[in-house]
Length: 417
Image (cartoon, rainbow, N blue to C red; front, side, top):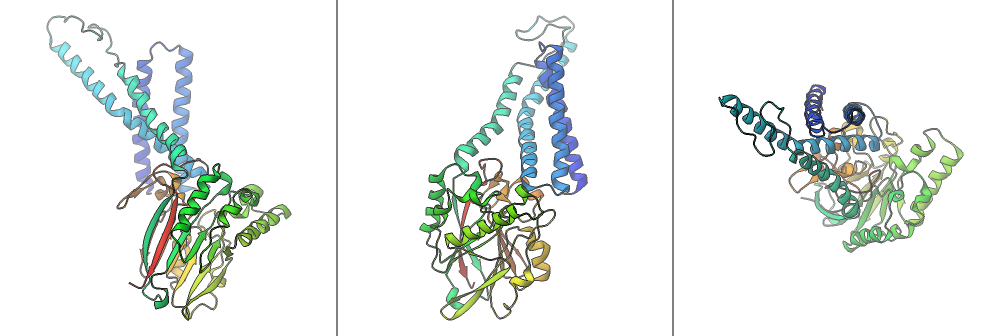
């Protein structure tokens, strides 16, 4: 987002804040001076801090969770105020017309019921309070519904992935992808199991998991390891690590015995589940005497996210493979390194963004606050001969729900054209 556009946007929001503030305090005339003072402090502290937070979220390298909280909060409060705005404008228009009528009358008119007498200030109508309550209820109810209904409302997203150099033996093969399990956030084993059963019912030939199995600690998988161990496919399940899997947000970036053991335990969990964890490695997948490459790297992200991935290792000895599919958790890796330095990568599979767990996702249109941070944040992207698919995730982090951007299970059909 360009800075001048954001400055104009925030200025407009500040004007809206002032307009709504004046409306609210004019309705509650019976507030004591102390109550009015406290409301004023809280109102402007929240709104000004959110505006500062928006600038920080977009232009500084804040962690994704912090950015998500700031942008979603800013968006929800601003939408609530815009819901209130039509009521305020209508009421101001009504009061303005009353003033004009009264000025035009030569004689003092009789007071209208529920309206102040001539000479008294024209106060806002009581329906303003109701409008404000309704406006506040809209985002609050949507967030509540997102927890109750959205968190485990798994969606099957079917895609045809065209790869012109695909060997004939692979034409029509199905590939499943899930991402961002974040098992430490789960609170409903039955629902999680239901999502796994939905994936298995599609009977994919191979499956990719593109990182963030846990929030911080390997032991978060204790109650879910057996569930995800059922994720099997005839041609294998291939996985990579995400930024949360290293324990950086719990132990810090510096190495320690506890952090090393935690990562070893997580790697062992992938092995116990039967998933082939690729850490700057590749596998040759053979079908009918023909081969393609499955490449997987450790986390590589722009900004403050760790760059543990080493593409030079993952791509070593793969020049003869006609198609190379890359698992890389963070979609910013595609534009940050893959497009420029590794044109031999045909398609990259990522997660990480969660679609910020909030937005709108339709067949022909999608929007989320996360698009102001990530250019590629959900769905299929193409540039020249390369493709990227961003899965919005199986689990959730921070806010324990989803509104509009529902948890995703992607099923690709590989095709030569």
